[in-house]
Image (cartoon, rainbow, N blue to C red):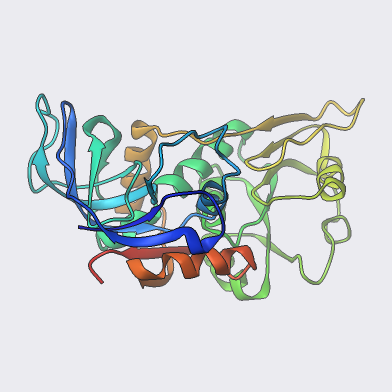
Length: 306
């Protein structure tokens, strides 16, 4: 089978599309014929070696965390799935024509959207779910979603609206129409104005999805009202002393129960999944390069069979 792999950490030139042996599922695992994976900017940091302490990996490593596909073989002891099941999940090694996954990590794929498009859901959707859950939003509160134009941002805006919050979202011009479709009540073009100037008053909660420098991180927490909340999936943000603002750093994790709930929301039409680009497996290195220049927005689908 073909797979996108790295044999060492480094720049995008270390990514190779290789022919390797098709894996065999062990106990409690299944073999998936991959319909698609999706690109996640975090994989750039993984490839560069910046995450080696947080996510130690054996090299060579097959890239790809999101998977959507069809089960073609069951390992011993698997009774929760059957050959032919269409599934999605957050796994390791999905940027390949076939991938092995723990059966327990997979959930039934949504039926309301194409199977390949469902690869956009796991990592981005779970990150958004866990960030919004951590904010403890209640109906009527105002939440600032900083970085709403990215893949996680689309899910975050929609989940915040489901919590009946008023959503203020930052995005660049090329993402503004999508962010408004997701339900944002107010859009801030971060390329044209600062957050402090754009907000008429402090918000109840801030969800940060953007890598910030020190000055930006320091400026973000004061945007929350006294007693408000700041949740970040990137930087660790410190609360201004004496304000009562609470801060949290969310490192997303796989949760099949939450993933199944996201699938149900997609199937009911309560959450939409928008794909901005589609590429074959051979485009992985190019996508890494583009991400490093900021030329990525929304969710990008990578289809090994394309």
